[in-house]
Length: 119
Length: 105
Image 1 (tube, each protein chain N blue to C red):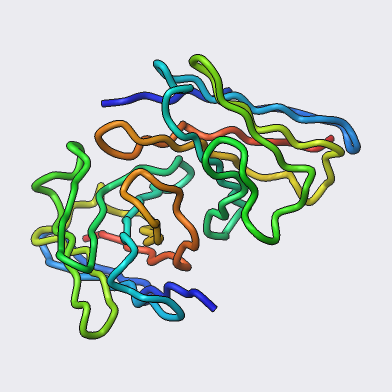
Image 2 (image 1 turned 90 degrees about the horizontal axis):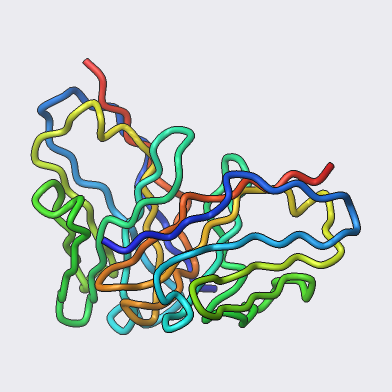
């Protein structure tokens, strides 16, 4: 069974750094892209960026370029989303999802990681 | 950046057909994908590449894409189909529509 399992919920203070993870299993991790999607409370889906684990080719949404860093460790089939300095406006649910091509559909999705940033 | 526009809400009676539209410039020249999201759950792919159904998705879900509009159609809508639906397309980056809340009255 293809699965993406994300790390657990996080509560952080503004200015702190954070790295959340997404571990793939049940498929060849290096031959599918992994995307990250933000969903703020009560709002819609926003595409943040995408990475190809085979060669670490990474594309960012202009809205998130410079705000987050997407990386991967293919030796442990895990993708990451990192913030160097969190803001309260980063409070959201973050999903990872797999796609066969950068322009392709996302399937499946991880269970989501809730990030809460509050002083 | 590329914009996709969906109606905020659509209502349908049980057993009837629900149609949810997604509009974007020359969307018909791109692939459109559709997701269903129920409260507290992760999105689930229901239609990919305009009109293909993933394994496990009921036949009542179908899709089309032409001109500037992609359409998700749910035939014989059931109460369990009540959810938020999002369209997605790629144009130098992935774009999602704002989402449509489907209510089954």
